[in-house]
Image (cartoon, rainbow, N blue to C red; front, top):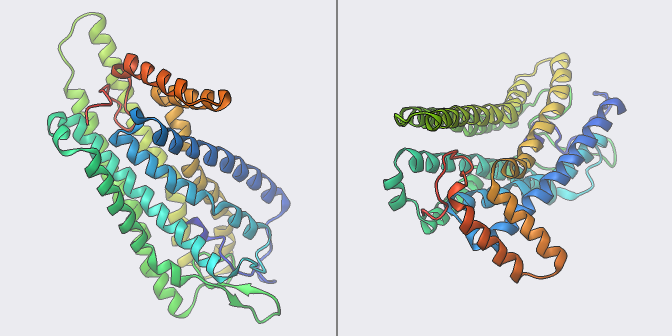
Length: 360
């Protein structure tokens, strides 16, 4: 989605100076690091959920689907780096240009919808646990995930036709009039009208989930705060600390969501309203920061799972141990034994309330 705003299949020509090496090299190093961490981490997440039945909770079904979405997003990173270093010619063809942008946009929508749906589930599980046991089942979650993907891909459909490769007047050069071209010329003609419509769509996909997350986590925090029992001594102190930690984590999640996604939307709004070369020059460097934050959002989830979830760490350890030993049976048995012993102490990611994983 970031690539439509900045690194599209567009020629710079002589109208826009390329980024200096002092900017390109650090950005490339950061992006390659994010690519390595994101691909390996998301692949591990998918393998864990596929291999271990104990990991196939309703929450983890969302997280596994999000990992697939993040992997598809990360596949577009090499093309973005190519466009940063060599804006023309675009050598990968018309179909790959359109498909890479469409998948990036659609997978971004899917991730946002997954985060929102997962937050609704956590709200129900924490605030209405008895009702959640009836409403939230694996079958319903799988069906909902399929619907979320369908809605996301259909919403991103116009981008497949909006982007493309066009021949530059100069020989052997390609260009594409799309959102966020690092050119000093603002978009023109019918493209501007289409871009404005899609701008509203993508902006809605950001601000509506952000509003929903803020409200849901606010309600979750209030429910946890009000559910404090009148305990005495160390029990009340420990519970008080748990509540405060939960509220802090909820605030961090919302802030991380804003930090990773807001720059992209601001950059797209800046571009669509660009009327002079000075603003476009600022937009270039603003979006080079948004690029790194965009791919950070697709890479950070496995890191968070590893930091927050004992269950994820144990499963990852057993998976890697089984890979090294070349056997599957012992790794699976050890994981099941560990889960049986520790399942009651595990805190759900995005829930931050200790509940057993086999509720649903």
